Length: 208
Image 1 (tube, rainbow, N blue to C red):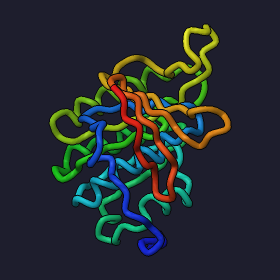
Image 2 (image 1 turned 45 degrees about the horizontal axis):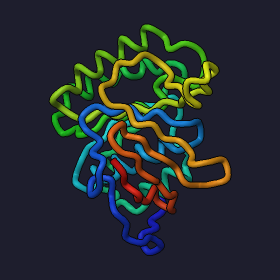
Image 3 (image 1 turned 135 degrees about the horizontal axis):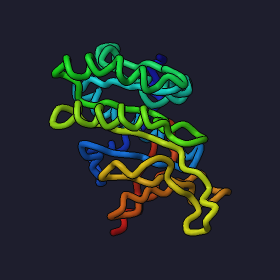
Image 4 (image 1 turned 45 degrees about the vertical axis):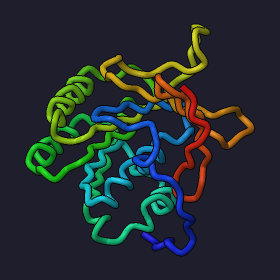
């Protein structure tokens, strides 16, 4: 990754501001709103503080965005970022990673990016594997999952969350409107405005 430290301006990190990610977090996002970028920003703060990350996904994050958000970190920090992509075999990939997660005491975060996929029903086997992963991470490390929402045809809400309701905390990430780059993060207790910047998001406009 390219070192872009000289191009960056200081900005608040996720851990310096509310909301706290918690130990089990589901980020459900409007497609293209940036759930992956938000998750990368959260784990970047952990890498800075000597954390160790296991990142499991269907596809690796966009290389440019990955470099934007993590590119300023030193090699020693990046060596603690363990990432793998498994395509449609995500359940198998998570199962294969459980030994690593359970065997390393130094893991601080596990991220499952796009755990539900973008279409169709969520496979029951995958749900079972996710529940096993929740148990493995319990009292050991923080678990973050992202998923794309879909248009709610019922008219109850503009966007509906894909997959079963198995998470105690879900953040909803949407665009402010179609003509604005600003994102709105609804944590269930407050609404926060996120402004895209070169290496993630700037948080502002907190409200209860």
